[in-house]
Image 1: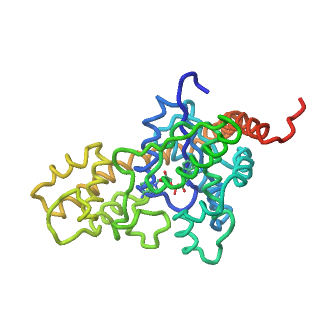
Image 2: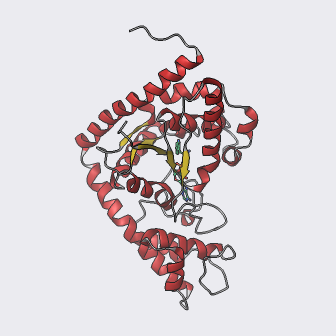
Image 3: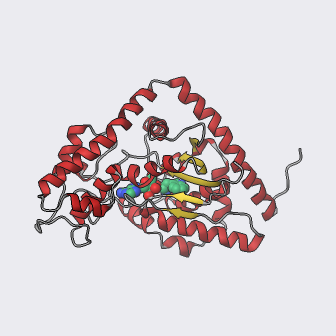
Length: 334
Ligand code: TYM
């Protein structure tokens, strides 16, 4: 642990096509935080198998996601970026925490309800227990802060509950983490139904901007975004489509939503949509170029994968051993 530095943990699932929501809500903030915190950013491939995956595709997506972390400005020398499946302590702590988590509290998880409705033919125990694995991810690194989008707040709440319950029984073992929600971009909505969040698994490809969409596609999707018939630009709940476009514009340009609204005063939705499209495309282009460059650096990426897995395992195992001792498992003999 870096002396005096607080710890950050976060992760993204290696599932589906990443969206602008993942970038603006999570990844973009990570690189901004890495100078002030000791950071662990995991490609959470173990979470991905709660829905059925094609093995070759999962492997490819996981590697591409790790490359994306670096392309998004996360410095692998400063921050530890690694695959969750390379650190066995995640699964081990998750099992232990399962035994300190109640069915009743898990039953309240809205994401489980949504996902089990979507995958009715595969409602597996992993899907149900998923927030416990997420709690293990965070608690293993004694994270003080967890940067996420708003949709993960309920999972973070249960993580805190489990940690406090454990600490009440065994003394102060876990740091109780706080969420970090970015000023803009914490909940990017679907372009086709702005009452729903933009999601990797949306069946309508026009609803989401994917991080790998080219410029023309981005601009076309923004032009088709659903707005309303009020013909005025505001950042209010009554205009969810327009509000979402303002949110995206603000997040991509670094402006405040109020500044963005002022910029479009008196202008039509056509102007707003074009400006949003340009701003998003300008945000994604450098990211895409960097991904293309890094994808060719096989040895460099392999080195990061190897070294960082060891770094992560070192910290994670320290917490795991402490937990195992506290609950009464026999100590290892060296
Ligand atoms: P995941 O993979 O669904 O999403 C990764 C991150 O992207 C954020 N996000 C969004 N932010 C704004 N607008 C959106 N439309 C949007 N969609 C997604 C999410 O809030 C998240 O921060 N369970 C987690 C992964 C995870 C994790 C963890 C996160 C596993 N272990 C430990 C933090 C700490 C998930 O499925 O995120």
